[in-house]
Image 1: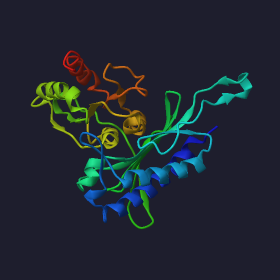
Image 2: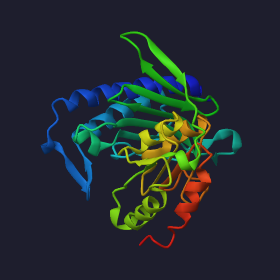
Image 3: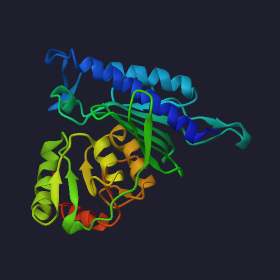
Image 4: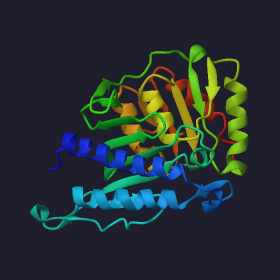
Length: 287
């Protein structure tokens, strides 16, 4: 049985080490190092180097776990067997890793960008850690343990803050409506969302990092966030942090069974149905 609190704190240190590597490489980074995965979707040796560092450390921390990683430097692993249940398959435990969420931001020296690490067993998220590199903020949660933000207040000291979502209603809400790389399919949807919300909510933002948008909801800095066509590594850790901070996370259909999908709606809970209602109006707009 994994000690979730102890394991989470160890993952925070791993995320910070990866963040330190990314921060160091940013100082000597060249645009010539950038590769194009898809249209407007970029990767560099920094993403891959960070992922190798994280995977190596997580293998030492929990050798039995498999991996789901954005850059594919680690295999997913095989289904485990439970010897006490006549060798029946039990839910696979996997690390879900985004070694650099917000690569486009990183390339342009534009905050935020982050390291995101989650531990998933079956469809249940057990641990979520997101380390934002520019602000040196580590967001973390374990299932049933609450959500926290650790900020360094000096060379040695650090401050731990318990996170809780806001109570803002939709008319005053600050929303994050992200712009995923699949622009052809999503353009009609985002146009509708902006048309319905712009001028009818507090304001709208797009921060360029799914992991950080989720953490901002958990911290009460944002009131709601929605994005589609994203990977498990983008949203897994941040989703647990939102839920442990008292918020709500679903997919675009309103289902809380979202961990195998490609869409996330995360809010303070107060405005969840407001977002889902408008998203529901877009069903016939996608191509």
